[in-house]
Image 1 (cartoon, rainbow, N blue to C red):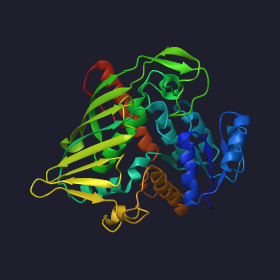
Image 2: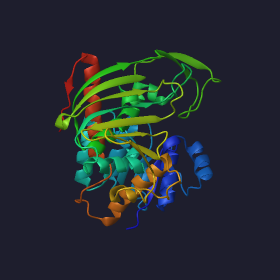
Image 3: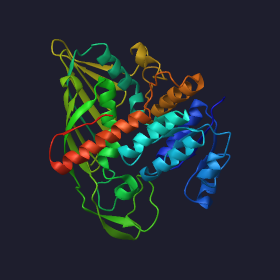
Image 4: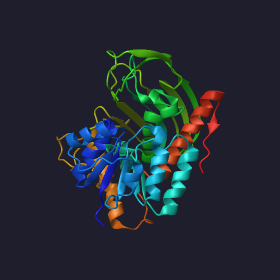
Length: 381
């Protein structure tokens, strides 16, 4: 059966999904948003054939085989549950749910329904992140010993900056850790092939009172001109987390949404017994390879220079930059290619519902560590 998709939520990331689906050649049957009148205007502007009236309306469309969930965190569980029970495959934005209890239920439900669940940890799909994984697997840097880095943003620097993620009822108990820290943690566990076993976390709310506008604000939109209410904030603007991984690997992660000038800078370095690797998402087409006994190197994103494992994920020749939108394209190619193959018992190389569950188990441990001011073991299922 030829796959066809629908998208729930057409904000910033939902439009990224829509664009990538079109580039991959997946038909998009329609969309579901929050307001029937606004949805119809959005449907027309985006050139989509249908705006669904409700979740039930979408669930009943037999032409849709995959639903992309790009909505606020608090509705992920309900929307994914209803789509799975309607026989749809689901690709959900992260985090998969509000907590690990919900995510564990979704892992089980997808298995029981014989449907495929994916989570959009799309940053794995930068070509040079794939190359970094291949380098670790191939022993290029020897045994990994240290992992360190950060994910820094500035879009919530000022008290006037507002987004639904600031409300714990909509976004969850953790914010910076859940929103961007899970990207970093997923990337490091995936590249190194080692799970985090223990955490020690320091979290802080840097801006303790914010000005919530009396009106709708899209992600990254400024709200300075709107009337507002002062709202106390309890979720994390900042976190630093000490990490113990399997195989005696140690690390530290810092995340912040209040670092001026950093728009979306995920940076990591992996130090091994023979060399190091470093990469920065704001300069995504260069991988640094550190050496002690000879000159260090900078590897450009060029399919002709990449390992076989990474080469197929670089769509353009050397000298032609690839970035954030392209990561969704490569993720969707993996996801839909798996669906088209039809063997749902085969290994899944894309981030799955189990991946999303692992990240929420980590978030639970990080939250407990910050509360208890102690090292907390990560209790994998």
